[in-house]
Image (cartoon, rainbow, N blue to C red):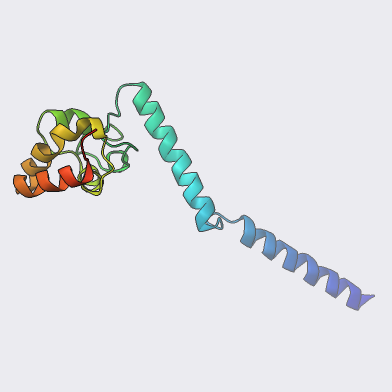
Length: 136
């Protein structure tokens, strides 16, 4: 009888450890964490967008402006679209995404000048923009 009680206590203890391990914060897989992150990011952007505080120049809005403060906007505010059309460089993520071809193609005419405002090399940037955004 004493031996069965010892096994039972050991089994309960092992189950408790397994429950603690698999329900502990941070035990989610990378895929689960990514899905949670994307959901949170989308929620923040949606809230800010509906309040007129998230105006990005990309096809798929950046996350830089949520994360960086101060910078282009305050806190989660994004003013990259306004900056771009006024000839001021957008945030670093937007610059990279535009140069990769992920900017809003309807804003093509503003890309080179605004990016060159930060980086220089207007002619080189114009060539990249023309390559990535052929005429609509």
